[in-house]
Amino acid sequence: MSFDSLNLPEALLRAVRDQGFATPTPIQAQAIPPALAGRDLVACAMTGSGKTAAFLLPALARLGATPPRKPNSGPRMLVLSPTRELAAQTAEQHRLLARHTKLRGAAVFGGVGMTPQERAFRTHVEVLVATPGRLLDHLQNAYARLDGVEILVLDEADRMLDMGFLPDIKRILAKLPGERQNLMFSATMPPPIAALTRQFLRNPVEVAIDRVAKPATGVTQSVYPVREDLKTALLVELLRRDTIHNAIVFTRTKHRANRLADRLVKAGVSADRIHGNRSQAQRTDSLARFKAGKVRVLVATDIAARGIDVEALSHVVNFDVPNVPEDYIHRVGRTARAEATGDAWTFVSDGERGDLAAIERAIGKRLPQLKLDGFDYAQQPAERFEIPVAERIAEIRARKAEERKRAKANAERRAGRAAGRPATPPPARRDRHAHDSGSHRVAVPVGARPYRAGEGRGTERPAPGNERNRRPERATGVTVDPWPGRRGHGHAPAHAARASAPQPAAARPFHSGAGDRRDERPGDRPRARRRLR
Ligand code: AMP
Image 1 (cartoon, rainbow, N blue to C red):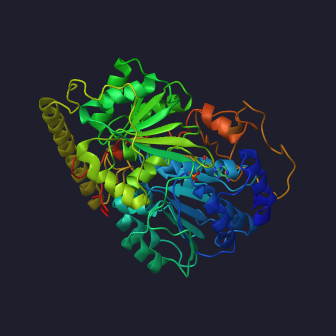
Image 2 (image 1 turned 90 degrees about the horizontal axis):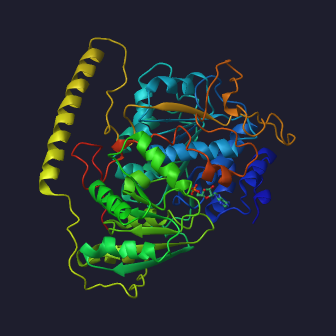
Image 3 (image 1 turned 120 degrees about the vertical axis):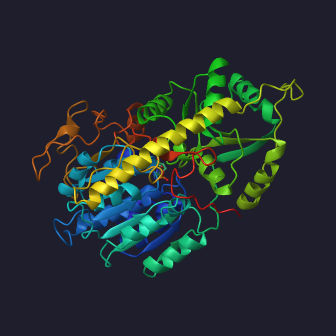
């Protein structure tokens, strides 16, 4: 099947060609026709399957073909994403796919100031990508309206459930017009998501529903049984042998991520880390350096790495076995994106065999077990990897002090609201709605090109390197900078731009509140509803 046979408008087909997509991925081939026909859809798809284009392409085609049902009533399409990273990437894909249309977009999520994001509502972007918590913050204000929404996308619905966003989602859904198209994407279909589907979707077309999605076919998965205290040595040895071009290495906790990254650097490996305790700027910088090939290993925790799209990632290493199969699938999905290939290695200590067995049951196969020739598996025990107790206690004390400070600030804020003072943004915090708030927030309008089916190549396209992103907004005359720091992609292929460009503003602020599963402080985020199978 080709994209040409999907009945998409020429402006979108051009963008698809610009991106270098030759054929639709399976999820695109199955989802685009019914979505284009206006049907509700529930699709089982992982990050890496091409799911974003699977909902953006038909939605943009439909929005481009009809005038707004309710002019000046806010966005016409709302995409709800569990994490700011995913929201940023979805907005970026929108920018690329809508580049020959005039359907503008914005990403709204926590971690950056509320005020600049108001523009997303006031200037009436067509496509709003938002994380639930930040969207609800905006919805307290009169400028934020959702009564013009014609298409709703719930992206990674199971993740949103996991992260405790279900009540927030229901509150948001209650504010949308009943007459709309609903597109739901989820890697798994746990009962609450199935219930949501029944409650909110109208006779949905079901696409590729599996109980657990499988990692992409291009991933070679294997297991390295190894003593817990030898994991670092094994990784260093594998890296030394140069079989790993670049890798994301997943650890169970932020502390372990820090320790491992430090040890790798000590061993002469260029490594960085990305996890919930790092500042936005640090996370953005680490990811940009990794994507640009300046760092070979990125040590990450699950949530911090979610939604990250790194082209040409050769290896995913599970330094610790994830304790739920879905995390394994999400981690492994970082490599072998779309049609590429990659390796996923899982280090398994004796204590982790149970978790590995659960993963193998979920993916329906036993993973081959490898032994690294020449590695001394019997060597003396290495230094313990865990964080020393005193350090841990000091950290817990500091966290508690921070919690008290924040609770006080919140109480004052609530008192202010009760006294009728205008709503102010919540205090800077790493934790509210997990990924979805904090101290620096930004609105990121994207894709503001006129939609003219069949328009000539290069129309209104600024030359590479110019101030393309600083064009004035047509309707308002307001100058917006959709992607501060991102300049002059011109006609460069999307993948080249992605590899070389700094992250868009929306992608920059990796929210420290992303948190880890095991070492995040209590109350950091809505209680995760873990699905243990
Ligand atoms: P997603 O699952 O939406 O996160 O997409 C994963 C990656 O696949 C992104 O980098 C997309 O640019 C890329 N992609 C999406 N559709 C296609 C396609 N039809 N052919 C090749 N790559 C694609």
